[in-house]
Image (cartoon, rainbow, N blue to C red; front, side, top):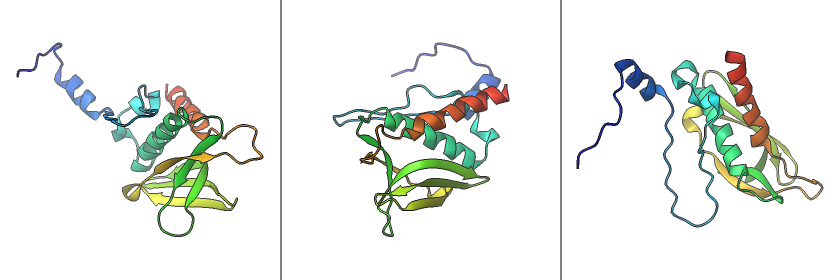
Length: 158
């Protein structure tokens, strides 16, 4: 089966397109799918201009935001942890320390403050629909607030 070429690209366009992010996902199960259909401007830039920490940080923000879009009003994003007794934390903040560290801030289910510092080569993130705290009127939507930062970064760069 032959592939039809619709457009002709210059070598500069080919090199630029090869450096841009590419997302591919396949979902087979029932339920909501949180696929990043549209990427914010910060994720459309070449990752070669960013540290490993910043690049991971920006993509994690996008995954958190997309995950939150599928949550109901009684749940917020949490992060499942393996090893130790932490179990599940609700994410309240996210940061990076160049060139290669990501940090997550949050609370355990019993309200203890947490900070997880993770090297980008060891980054494993399990997003979980965690019940919001009973005293909260609305769930905490950290991904939407963090995603605004990705938009500001683009404005600042122009």
